[in-house]
Length: 66
Image 1 (spheres, rainbow, N blue to C red):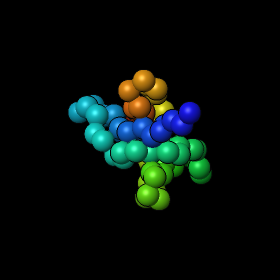
Image 2 (image 1 turned 90 degrees about the vertical axis):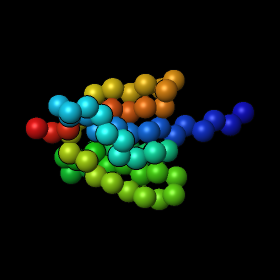
Image 3 (image 1 turned 30 degrees about the vertical axis):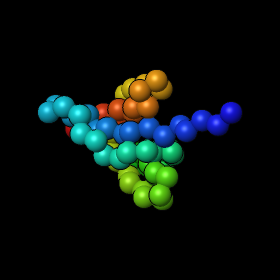
């Protein structure tokens, strides 16, 4: 049985949540930043901390660094 385990990644700040990547398949800490990549190989680095992961909704919330 296969499972597609992509998640959407959002950056949360005082103004709310902003979608920064759809269908992310990798999230890791690298050089003090959060590095994410999607199915097609797009990569992004974010500054902040992982605040919440909701597996049922395939949603990851990154708290923006002040």
